[in-house]
Length: 248
Image 1 (cartoon, rainbow, N blue to C red):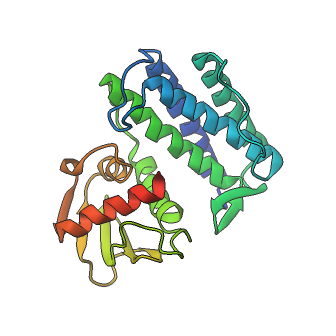
Image 2 (cartoon, helix red, strand yellow):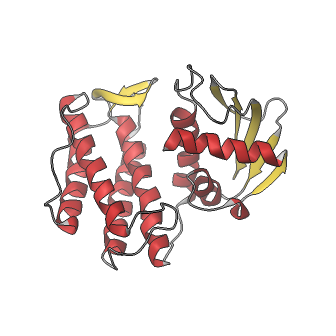
């Protein structure tokens, strides 16, 4: 991903701020259950995110997936480890810059710029998790939420993951998503998902809402009452289930 200096600062700023907020809310209590992640507590989220951060530090250091992975972090104090991991991923991104060649799961982007974006969005989704656990949810910046919708649709959903037909939700329909002046048209069957910017062609179902509502619905952090839909309700339901397969 070719990032301008402004874009890099935008993403890195959100890694810092969303990561800091996640840690701050985590200190309200580690035992609180996370509504959107059955079986998880706030401590589960902090330890998961710490592991993600340190994994990406290694990816940026090596330019490849670390193997073996993971080391044994069980003995680490949760807050100490989380704070250390957040500082480490910020430092690793700064050191790498945005054009370092490295492993990613985006077939169109093998640069460290990918991880600037991914870590910002990883941080905001899990910040919401711990805020929901403690009932202190704060807004997501509209620009970040719109970018998160775009990233979730590609590469997360629209990548080359479906060639073997490995889905319980083949969908076989076109869905259109619109939020704050941006539109995405997603066409899916059992073996491919294509994502196009814009509103060309017919759609079996349409999804509308504010950027944060659509983003959180796509990530399963809120229910369908947060968005508006038109067209075939069963297509909307199957589309959400296909997204869940792509993000599990």
